[in-house]
Image (tube, rainbow over all chains, first blue to last red; front, side):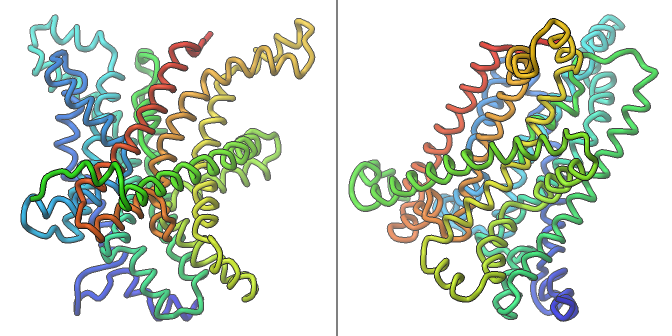
Length: 247
Length: 231
């Protein structure tokens, strides 16, 4: 097992880079971070649409949420990878395919986190802002969202964990992320499959468990700070958002 | 771009492949639920037990399983784990339908970790005084559980457990990674044999969506019919 780590750790972390394309853990983390960043503005818009009083905005977004949650992410990857090129005429490469799929996936889940965050702010806050003369947009931007966004931070970190786990789907279409590189190492070494896949799992565990501890610590700190303030409306926003988030 | 050929989905060879895939997906789903639920109850009880060692065991299981992607689980059970067995047993496994068994093991262990958390928080949501009050009123341990604690705990637990089964239904698609001939696998097969991606993926999308929406609707109905009662 020590031999295995000594021989292959660089390959596992960055793939063939700089001689070839970047791969391994670096691609896993890069893809997840990029997808989450790109999904943030979309998620904010979807979340606002979900709590909108205008049905024409709310209904299509609600349908999108049910659609994306109702099918496997892998199926979305297949649609993008195999079907999209017959429409556009260009082959979509593996990285872009995974990026598009993950941005859609994250936008929808972030949208639900934003919605739970907004709904977690007591209604009196909005009414008070309106009573003080702010318009709907002003009340949202200056009163509701600053409070909602702060309470969403732990859920955001947890969504990053989900995204890192989801990048492993790239394995199926041949993206050189961590699981794919591990399988390549396995076919080169051939005699230690148990060790190779245990090490792969260990890498994911360290990354994801570490991040989820960070989320937990943020949540704890927020709970401590929130204590002197008046009681919140039932169901803390983070708890709601986590219940909706995926495996 | 060719038009959408519905006939392809209604009869013929491709129709048979896709329907066979649906059957395998449903079998995998049913088998996994049947095994994951009891395991989840055991893990939840471990985490709620008064002994620290058992609590730690339960917590370690949940954290280790949840923080590793399902694909890594399946790759481990299919390629990694059989290496620990004697050669003869290994040969026999790979000659048989081992990919289905490996997928069922991986999915069961994975789903159980999430379900255990749903069950644990459901039981913890019922204040201990409910049980104590029932005993004080003269009910025995079992009647107190059956008539007072469980009816309340089930109301809290069942809707999130059903949401978890929606995720499990979608997660069965990952079994295609190790070559289980389920829906995604057959869709990819039709795609490469006939270059009919819209039809193949359309069929699969309808199957997953129908399953997910049905389970979601049942969860919503249960939630309305038996709402959570809090003190």
